[in-house]
Amino acid sequence: MSTYHSTTPSPNPSQIFPTAATEIQRFFDLLYPGIGEGYLLLSWPSPTRTHKDGKPALDTSWHNLATTALGRIADRAAAIASTHSVYFGVAIQHPSRHPNPFQRSRNDSAALMPALYFDIDLASGAHAASALPATDADALAFLQTLPAKPSLILHTGGGLHGYWLFESPIYLTTDPERAAMAHLLKEFAYTLRLLGTAYGWELDALRDLARVLRPAGTINHKYGKPVAIIAESAARYTPADFDWLTTLPAPSVHHGPGAGVHDQPDLLRVVEAYGGTLTQKSASEWHGAHPIHGSSTGVNLDVNGDKGLWHCWRHGTGGDALSMIALGERLIGCEDLQPGALSGTRFAHVLEIAHNLFDWTPPGAPRSYFPALTPHLSRGLSTVLRRTL
Ligand SMILES: [Zn+2]
Image 1 (spheres, rainbow, N blue to C red):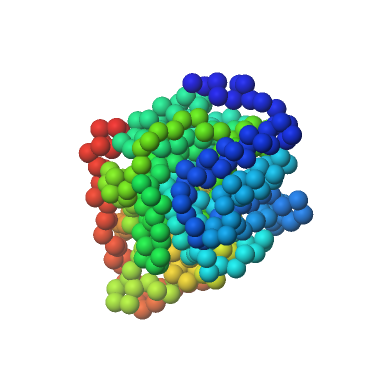
Image 2: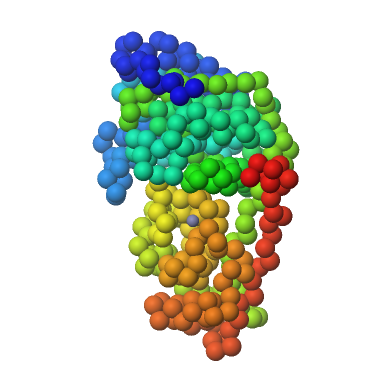
């Protein structure tokens, strides 16, 4: 079970090119059967452009499914794969978007979702010292314990990617549909992360509709290993098959008496004050590594500047600026942050720090301020999950 890549062929481009294109096409055919609209995006590390942190930016080619067969796109992916790692946007992008090599998949223009997915890094290579599955066999066994078995499992050289294919790809035509799919993905990742803790693992629960992953048939050039399908089944799903997922914890948001704490300290400033570096994703959205417990992906913290809310993808928790101050001051752990977790003297301490460090005074009555916390919405563990844990 753990010998998938012990017989890794050397990634000799001339050798792998013809068969690679066939396998990439087979993979795309499984994900996007008969889909004839929208854009399938291929991305690869730019040879010329880098981000501020020195990591290469992604260049992207846009393939219009109304005019381009999956086989042609697979040929292109195979050509790129001969020299670069290749990624594809799992969600097909809306046909109204304008192709731009410097832009990639976005949440708000996701138009079709073929599957739920989850990736598991292995404790080797770049992640040698982390709390991750030690072997392929461990990760595979874990995936097979789930109430819904993956339709496809890929070995990516550094870990496993599971795909739970839908009976047919799901069109996302409205913002509420996109939000519902994004929520399902988050709950899925949150639940698998939670299940992984029973094995002592810290799986990353970073998931959104804009995610790019490595297609089967390409090469992971970081490790010089093929990205290959190692297991597949006829299992296909509908969203209703995932009723065993654990409900996401509600964000820890603090409301004062009356008007509530609408005028909190600036969240972006708070995150940066505790060492976080954020990158802007859209007019109001930012992301980066969690300033307190860090991130293996570099982007496990989402911040909405307009709403003054943040979300941690590792722990599935989130909150407002005051909650972030509590984390920054080590008054509570990110994983323990639930509505109601900050109260009494601990919350008074947060307000005092907000005043001293961020020159902030609660609006209204600063001396007689009490938090009214949102109720905890979690319905708790499902029976299936409880049995598994
Ligand atoms: Zn966290």
